Image 1 (cartoon, rainbow, N blue to C red):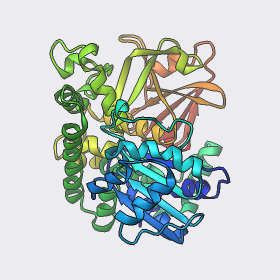
Image 2: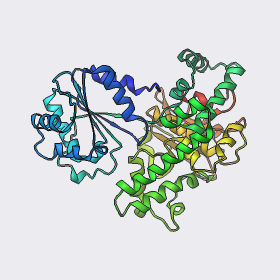
Image 3: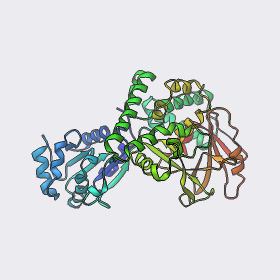
Image 4: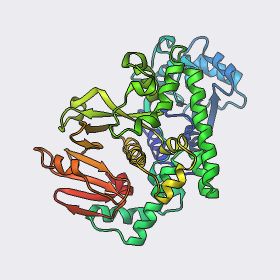
Length: 431
């Protein structure tokens, strides 16, 4: 069983005195159902599971009155082996996006407070106008992603103590012993290719078979395309699909601003902007907004209509490219496109750490891959795919007023020079 950080969050929620029904959002196949089910069986004496896609008839539970007494009666009638003991029961409403009225019912479970409730789903396809009353203020929220790099290391057999040792080198800005550094870079390249989707990671750690992992990844991408066909509005289906399939092309450009003309000749924000946001809401892509100036607060200086788009799981991005791309990443033979892939993995790491993504790209001037806040300061970050760590833009930006230092992430070991701290790519998880 894969160890996931969100399990700790579930225990914290369970022990909270004033907890509300918990809504766990996330892209499909990131492991929501598996983790919640395992948690429920481990912690609760009584546990009732309802999956609205597996048993569509379960939606009828919520067709009538939504007071909790009525709902409990309906659940006991329609769910075999339902265990509904006040104060000792978890009700798990899975794939809740398929039952909008169940979302409304979360408010009444919160007010009643006799039963713990977790609702899970990608929330795709829910038209807010179909929900009679959104439970705003009556739910706790968590977002679940595919495995981050540290979770991947755990799955690969790397001990917690070993990761702590690596962190100590990061904290002291000391070089990692060469053998350890080389092994961490090897694991990092594997993570780029495999990504964090649980089914893919499970297959790889058990078989070390890249080809079989790729087969599963392609299946997940196909499922995402199926979700677009299933959940997007009729007017959005083709546009959302086109936006999704354009992501690898968008990242192949030197200037990576998302351009709707890449999706379709003469494409515009008006035509495709909503479809792209649909993919973000589905947990498939991330936005990285360009800054008008390199200052905090980033949100206030972000240009709303100038942004890059990254895939939320880099392994899925790899699977959308040529089948040999994974082998090229592992061997280091990839050409110019590798820069985009390594940017995507750092964007993925930052997103899973709860950071919003910002960059500073001015054509023919400076190109800073990311800006993040560290200790109340705006810190520019450049990502280099290999040992070539020349960072012309970064050297320029660290001379600007208000920028104390910059960070360079590359395949090289730890080092510092002229207001620039250089760290190996795998240390991005510590930022």
